[in-house]
Length: 96
Image 1: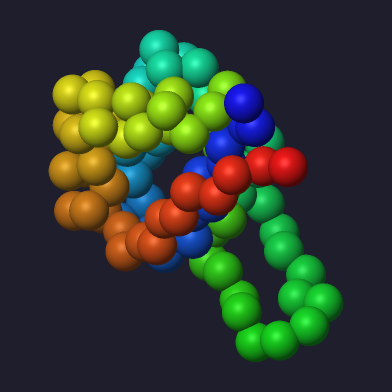
Image 2: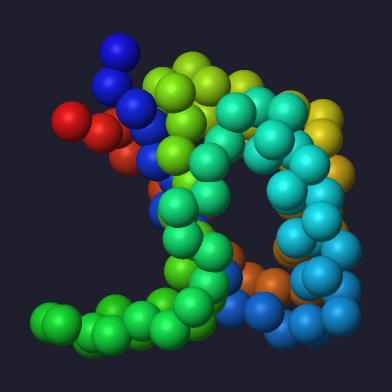
């Protein structure tokens, strides 16, 4: 089974509240086998006009594992905190 990646572009609107999300997200990620490959940091646009605010990339064993994490009660709690403190776009992509 190919690995799955969750790619997130997050615009933090309340850094203090977002800190709570990071803690909850880390715990949920650990429980469901996520590996954080990218978690913020500077980006360099090489082509086009995409300029993510905060780019996060998670790796999962497969799509089913990523979906279990996304649907989990632990991450549902984290989502509520994130949505109150940031705007974001998330997508899942299958690896090769």
